Image 1 (cartoon, rainbow, N blue to C red):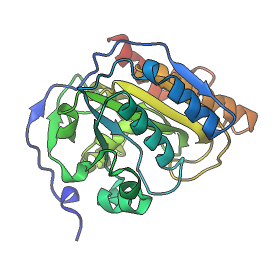
Image 2: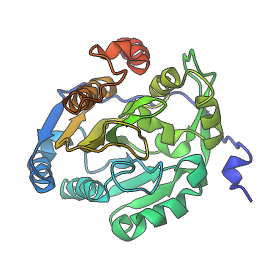
Image 3: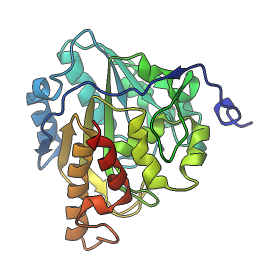
Image 4: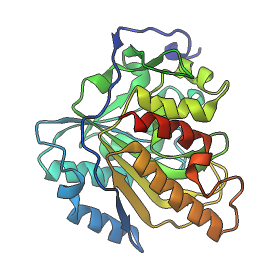
Length: 288
């Protein structure tokens, strides 16, 4: 039998968009020749990275579990553990780890178990499967959507962190911070997402939900294919910031440079705003 969330859409209320109030800060890029070097640099910079967070905050980390396949198809659990540990070091202990797997991989709990998430993270943070939670309707000034249905959880926390991977995407061109919000969509709305204007609809997700911090893991991106498989290269970079568009532009620059170096530029353009996802995102963030 199909999971309940794929059979019927039950909405428990309506809310205004969840937009961040955290100020725009300079994008941080951490480059290292090894994971250990990168993690060490993140550790030394944690007060700066999490400067807008306080010990009283409830923090939701929205990670990437489209599938349980290894990083970069899904989040690297070592990176997730590093972030949780640094939050603990700063006195932040009310931490939630949330995601809804892709429709073929629902129930999310099963995919999380396959990934090994519970045995690695459960003692450090509370794990939330969005497909088991209540859903809220969000209406905004959309052009490509009429409304979005997202987890009630996102309105119950003080801060949201997006932990996204840098990678190409066979249908959406690329998957960075903005696209991570697809995992916040009610699974039945994802059919609508993929019906038409995919890139534009992805950009408009940020009209409904915006995180307070974005961390792009570009240590080992897909530079072809994606989101689940493709050509992987060493990127050796973590990109961190508070503005989705600024962070994604930096992620795109990294992705394009790696594609050039490996002669797989394909249809990616020098001007990011010629890419449909960025064209719409630019219009959205200029209104902020």
